[in-house]
Length: 253
View 1 (spheres, one colour):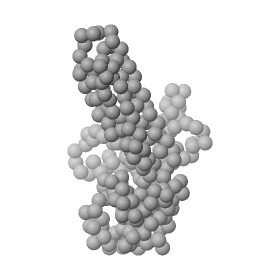
View 2 (view 1 turned 180 degrees about the horizontal axis):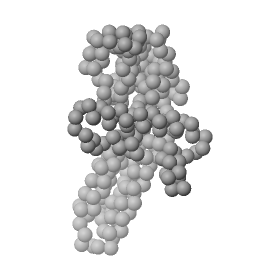
View 3 (view 1 turned 90 degrees about the vertical axis):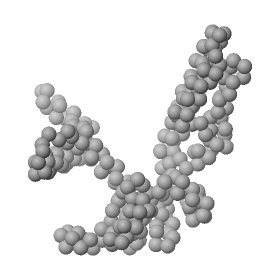
């Protein structure tokens, strides 16, 4: 904290990390070091807050909402687009299972000596792989396989679709609920930047240098290349063309 204050003139340092990076242990360490945090909580933790009546389902909406308790601020939102995507994904999975069921039933019908248990196992394994066993069940009636949707279980599974909760110990005077929300969502840009640097066109890896000095130089060049790519992407946003495509077209012309 002292180094950040002296070197960069920072009055307050806030770490932003996803729910896998900043957990209760890290929150305590950051607090003891004088830092602040912005992170998100898991679905089970959201359920715990709902059961404790700290938050209510009605608070999840397209607009951000905030609840505070004992110095911790919880910023809530439901992303309607994400909710639609999750619902569509479940529908696609159910359709895939239905196609498999029809295929297995057709096979059983055409092969009288085929074992029903084998067809059952194939269907159950696929349902488990798609992780929809909580609301989609399969049973056999004679030599016919049937699917049943457990509607209450499906509604429970979909209850928090698109819902997320961001938490922080930053005071409201330092950051509004919208700022807290937006800074957390900025993580997607950071993740994209790392993917671009490591595995996409910049290809930081594999690193073929050996010394620490050369490795730092290699990483510096990649980061500078990324900054150039980012600025070009912003400048060419109206052209509806990626930086990679523009350079490829230039090289081929």
